[in-house]
Length: 287
Figure 1 (tube, rainbow, N blue to C red):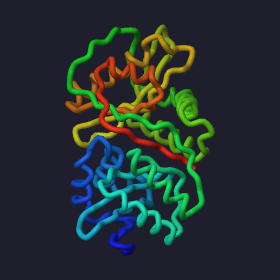
Figure 2 (figure 1 turned 30 degrees about the vertical axis):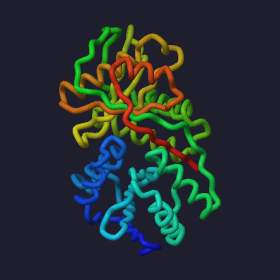
Figure 3 (figure 1 turned 90 degrees about the horizontal axis):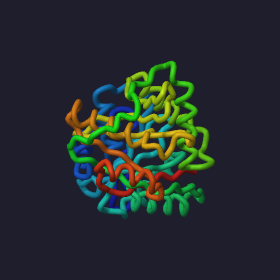
């Protein structure tokens, strides 16, 4: 569909120009990591996200200006853009096509413009979470303090970890909608089965969790980090994140990436102490 000087392409099965789209996204690989990871997984395994996917790509002439991706239960992931004028045609296309979304995640400047246009057109407001910093770590060995034992989560841990997942989300985004909580639970369950969830155990007690996801652009992301309140300020999250960072560096020969709410000063202190550096700012907005 052509809107003003832009063309909006909406893919729901096979995505055309995938190589060209990935080339565009790889100009800002840290900022676009989530979309790149999804699209590369989709290319390798088309059934990875189920029956329905949605990818919206906005062109101006022959140049890509913005890319979005969504799969079932996912919020809309939106890429960087050096042309914020491309956002209005994207939202107008969604209006004309009667497309709705529970939330949107991406670079702060792009998301802010998107939710503004969405409100003007749909008269619907989003609940804006705190912005997050994206951090990247250089490939350098970090010493462990050996506070406990790190092990991979198994199915027997799933019930507890799903409760921790809910608690972690609600810590950051109170009143999160059930559809978002459920998508996070599905993600944790899947990561457990892929043996990508790690636990720190101290004196036979599980005290902290974290996960490693994605294998795109020589980066893997540390996420789902959570320590129950009674076990915080004891160095447990630092220990577990250090272990996962070392694993990504030494075993995978990749760069560790993570995001943290910009108001979460204790977590930022932990990551900077480990050696992570700020690379960009992103925002998640929910209805």
